[in-house]
Every structure is written in structure tokens, then in C-alpha cells.
Amino acid sequence: DPAHPQSEDTKVLDLAQLTDLLERVFLRAGASPDVAAILARNCAGCERDGAASHGIFRIPGYLSSIASGWVDPRAQPRVEDIGAAMVRVDAMNGFAQPALAAARSLVLAKVRDAGAAVLAIRNSHHFSALWPDVEPFADEGLLAISMTNSFACAVPHGAQSPVFGTNPIAYAAPRLGGPPLVADLATSSMSNGDVQIAAREGRQLPQGYAVDGEGRPTTDPQTVLDSGALLTFGGHKGSAISLMIELLGAALTGGQFSFEVDWSAYPGAQTPHTGQLFIVIDPDRGNPGNFAARAETLVERLLDAGMSRLPGTRRYQQREKSERSGIAIPLAAYQRLEQLAAD
Ligand code: NDP
Image 1 (cartoon, helix red, strand yellow):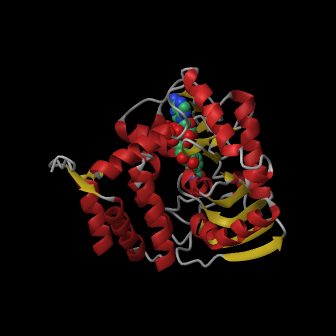
Image 2: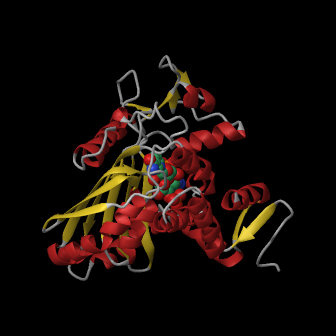
């Protein structure tokens, strides 16, 4: 079947098949059915979109964190209605995505009513990309911004030791002529997942991205993972944004700062236990009936100016390819997942 190029060392699955397999893996690891379904959908979606550092690559980390007792894979989030435009969730030491799912309908009702809403999640573990959290809001015509802090592995500009996490921020906005504009970036020079992938593949990091345990520049990914740290992106500017993410993702939500995450009593723990903030806005309240068209005008100008790749374009192209020809994963990884689902 030419639409499903299956070589000896890859296995091709469609999204439903991969989601089902991952759901069984999470269930087997002790997750509740709700949590297993949400994490599986998230992880399979990352794999489908070629977001390699947050697809099946993350499964060992999820399982090791769950097995260590650090994160509760059966947690039932508690949603609190705080006011006209504010929702809080205690994720109960569970994953952040089920907390978002539990609060989503209340947040949407508040956005429809108030024009905007803030969702503050605390006591949560985020171990994935942020774009799956924000893109669905833009699919409904809304603007969404989200950020989460992680664990101390990035050195603030001018400092000598790591205080910030890789602290990603993402936004999604509807546009008239295409899928939502979605950007999702770590505020460290690169994400931890990419450092791990570079180490695994024996690649050096670019100059100026990281330091060793003594604060000296290094390009060796294993040194960074063992004892070093990343820098923030863009010097003092990225550092200022990362600081904001600590404030909004942790101080505002009631979560831990990245530097407070202490998993030393839980060998194998990998999921940062912090907080996550969302700001969701109905653009019709700012520019009635016109936001998506204005976004399109801007996109056209960007394309005219030679910007052939918008944030999100690579993912959407990979998604289309996966929908056409399936998601190809290395056969060994597939067999390992089947084993984990069955053990
Ligand atoms: P990248 O640097 O790969 O990409 C950042 C953004 O820029 C993406 O929206 C990407 O779009 C876009 N982009 C990349 N290259 C170009 C280009 N040449 N022109 C225009 N746009 C471009 O991401 P990061 O490595 O910073 O982050 C990777 C992931 O790690 C994110 O999904 C983030 O959420 C996640 N992360 C999660 C953490 C957690 O604690 N849970 C911690 C840190 C990071 P596209 O997607 O289409 O490539």
C-alpha cells in the first residue's frame, strides 16, 4: 500500500491506533481511565505532529515518574469558580492536562460571558508541549495564552546558577484563511527534551546555549544533563519572560517555583510539579467580527515579506502527512510500547 510505507524497521499506525496503544500503556501504569485517555491523546497528537521531544519519546519519563510515586495518575482535579472571569484548579498532584479538561467548560462559559477568563492550575505536573492545550481554544475562535514553569535547569541572565525552568509559553489565535496561528516555545535556549535527544544521538549543542556545573560554556549535552544548565533565550530579554512565567505559572496559581521542585525523595521522578496559567479571550470583544480577518491580513503581509514558515507550519505539514500516510514509529519502540501495554 503506497499510502502506508511500512519498512522492516518502522511500524505505521493511524492516530486512533497509536492513541489506543498509549492509553493501554497508561492504564497498565496505574492511570485512571480519564487520565490515561487524556495523556494518550496528547502524546499521540505530539507524535503525529512531529513534535518529537513530546511524543512517544516521553513515555519512559511518564512511567518512571508514576512508578516513583511522585505524581498521582489517578488524581481527580478540583475546580473552583472564583469569579466572573477567574477559575482555579487544584490538580491534586496529578497531570495538568486532566485539570485543564476538568475546567474547560467553565472557562468557556466565562469567556462567553465576560469576554475573557483566567484559568490558574496548581499542584500539577506538565510533561508535554503546550500547543495541544491552546490550539483547541483557537479552533473555537478564541485567543489563548498559556505558560508553565518546570524545574530549575536554566540560568537567569547574569546569574551563576539555575533558578528558572525551561518555562514554555504558547499562544493560539484564529485566522480566516487557515488553521490557527500557534506558537509554542521554551524560554530556555532549547527544551530539555531536545538536550536529551542530542545526547542520545551524540550531537553537540550550539555554542552559547548552555553551561557546565562551574558555569563555563559547554556544547556537550550529557554535561548539561548531568551537572550543567541551559541559558535563557535572547539574553536578558528571554530571562525577563522566564521570570514572568515563574510569577504567573507559580506565584499566581499557587504552584511551586521551578527552584522549589524537590524530587530527591522520589528516584525516577521526572515530571515538574508546578502550576500552569491560561488567559483565554474572545477576540470579538476587542474587534467585533474582525479579528480573524485582521490576522489573515498580517499573515499575507508576512508571506509577501518572504516568511515562508509561520510558527505552527511545520507541525501542520507533519500532521497532514501523518493523516495521509500514517504515523511511522521505529519498530523497536512500537514493540516496547506493546510490551508495556501488556506486562
Ligand atoms: P522550537 O524552538 O522548536 O519552536 C518554537 C516555536 O517557533 C514553534 O511554534 C515553532 O513552530 C516556531 N518555529 C520554529 N522554527 C521556526 C522558523 N524557522 N520560522 C518560524 N517559526 C519557527 O520550540 P522549543 O524547542 O522552544 O520548545 C519545544 C517544545 O517543548 C514546546 O512545545 C514546549 O511547550 C515544550 N516544552 C515543555 C516544557 C514543559 O515543562 N512541559 C518545558 C519546555 C518546553 P513549529 O511548531 O511549527 O515548529
